[in-house]
Length: 146
Image 1 (cartoon, one colour):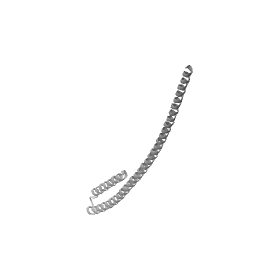
Image 2 (image 1 turned 90 degrees about the vertical axis):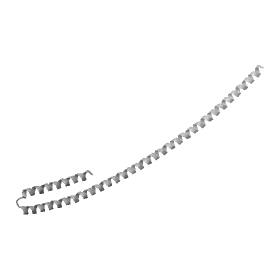
Image 3 (image 1 turned 135 degrees about the vertical axis):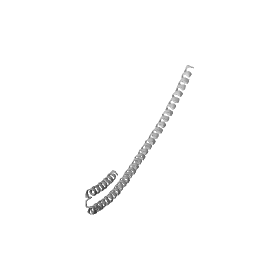
Image 4 (image 1 turned 120 degrees about the vertical axis):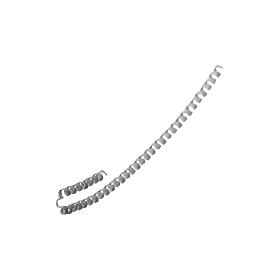
């Protein structure tokens, strides 16, 4: 009976070893499958990250192009406004010069007519000319400020 026990014990031990080996193989296979899933997930995440980087770079470039176009439009608008102001200033200067000539002519005529009131007329003419110069200077400052 002791031999039977030994054979029975050996048989039970052998079954336990086989069961443990089977569980070990199953665990190894499960670990390999989990490793494959994790590797696939990492590759998918890396692809997503690269796609996001590319989309971000494209969006940034688009924003840069739009900003550059906006700056160009603003510069063009500014240059147009400055050119218009300069034309306006030139026209005002021409009108002021013509007005100064008319004032001088009127003053000369008044001096000829009055003869003796030359000092008062000269002061009036100088005051008018000073006022016109101040107007021109104010317009120049306004044009320079644009």
